[in-house]
Length: 331
Image (cartoon, rainbow, N blue to C red):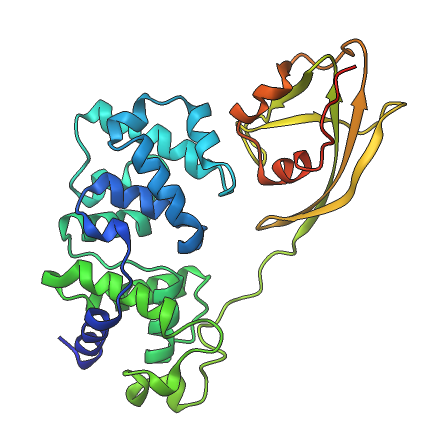
């Protein structure tokens, strides 16, 4: 082992995070944690992991759930394709008869990329394959002075090869988790703890005063803006919702009537509510329209009782808008 790896593993033994999915080698529990944490901070993701494990303790239990149930449980985490892929992959596993034990088998599951496959394979089964995420990019680029942009194919290949070359085959799980924790706790994006860092003495970025500029990222696409107008129709204790189609944001989740024209008599509840996604910023207006008879709507809208609306998975933006609804007072 190199001095870098030995120092890192020693640091991990003393400072590694105590996380519930690290108390098991169950590939299902580890996979679930990896999917939840793909775009989510640990503090936010942990209660979701605990609820999923409580409600669906095995991959077979998750497979038997409906997609609506899974999306409802996922509500608030965003990036809902993760939940749909998770559910589809659970059904794949059940069809195969067991959770795959090879990197290729894990990688073949719906929604599982190289990173997630490597994480599950190394942590659950000890497979000698390096995990490369944002934390790993940052630690390795700073320590070894890698200045190839990490959001390019060349940069990804370079850091992945470096991580793989450093990985001690008998300690793949500890090495991968150590790198991730070190990036999350010590070698952070902003204000890294360089003065207390056990690797500082040989760190290229620290020595050359380049900590703030490594890792390098190429400029990416401009964020687009999009406007949404929602009408919450209230009619005899019911409201109209529809399921969002494939090929757009929030596929499979529900929302109130989305329209370009506001009907006469509707009351504006919220204006210009901002909601930020990865590549776009949404601005939403939210109207309440109380009527005595059901208006004509497109065929894909369904009428549901207002008191049963909670059983439908909705995007976080819609959840925020619904919280502003005045309580319905029956006449």
